[in-house]
Amino acid sequence: MKFQAPKGVSEYFPPRSRAFEWVRESLIAPARLAGYQLLELPVFEDTELFTRGVGASTDVVSKEMYTFQDRGGRSITLRPEGTVGALRAVIEHGLDRKSLPVKIFYSGAFFRAERPQAGRYRQFYSVGIEAVGSDDPALDAEVIAIADNGFKSLGLKQYHLEITSLGDLASRAAHRIDLVKYIAGLKLDEATQARAEINPLRLFDDKREEIRAFMAKAPLLLDYLSQESQENFAAVQRYLTHMGIDFQINPRMVRGLDYYTGTTFEFVHDLLGAQSGIGGGGRYDGLMKEIGGQDITGIGFGLGVDRALLAVEAEGLLKGDEFTSDLFLIPLGEDAKSRALLLAAEVRKFGHSVEIAFGDRALKGAMKSADKSGAAYVVVLGDAEIASATVELKQMSTGSTSSVTLTSLPQALSLALAK
Ligand code: HAM
Image: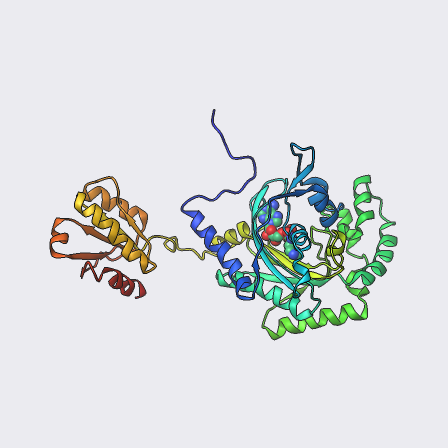
């Protein structure tokens, strides 16, 4: 029997898993610096949380959830996204009874039974933040800036930011009346009709040519914004400009989740083809209340770690030697091996990564392993080196060597690596 991973999941194994880790950490780091704290969440929740929170008109809820009965007969769903689970936890643990906004981040695997293709997986990885309990437009701008900082810290350049406002609940109600009237002129199949009844905005996202052509002339929500929503959206744009963050307004943006109101945004990478959304998010005015909490608003984002890694690779930002060890230590003989264990520990105290050649191999074989590992420096530790308490620190890329005493090896390596 030969086992394989389930269809359409993303897996990361060495050496690429190092790049994946780096991408994930880099995307979270700006949130930590802005005072967001970890929320570690279960990967499964009550199915109803997602149906209510994410919305029944969405593909995510209607077609893509991994739902099953657990042993107690409860309907359970593997989380397709992070926001509603995060808010469930905020409400359950009363985090919103303390100072607002509550600022949390999370990171992990999410599950959507989509048709797998490059950049679209059934289990994918995302990092996200949520700021709950403030409607300050400066917060919207900061949330967007945090995501942008993450992408910039990876070195990404070939992406752009699209923003829109989906208005407050009053603006949406006004727009909905006209949109529903407009859509009545279109002959729709039953399933599309049902989706449109729950959320007519969904039709802006329909890929079928005749619907696209029809929707090209449909009334746009952006033209229905209440005075307050307009002012809010203008303020967000002002703050973004003030921070030097470029954006385009996309009045036809439709997010795949139903809870959005007000500022809504997407980061789109220019080299990723069909699955080009590397991150997205927005405000959600009614969501906390919808799932049983206080009637307070919030805003957040989710960034695709898999897609951000693909973007980094597409832009050619990795040379391949970023994540290799600093030092490869080759002990020759039993005495050298015990010393190598301690020496490695000393060097690691300086924050440098050290690998040891295990298995009592001859020098030639061990050197080959050092080469393959891609380590920056190599040190051979044999009887002569032990006797003189001195080793040759060899730079692998150039072959150049320098003599250093055993006790000064950590500092010598620090200096060499800093050059
Ligand atoms: P989302 O746009 O559905 O938003 O997902 C966030 C990111 O996850 C996407 O931009 C994309 O990069 C990545 N992603 C989504 N589906 C897949 C997939 N099948 N395979 C690979 N990557 C994928 C949310 O989930 C919201 N919870 C974000 C949010 C937080 N809004 C407010 N707060």
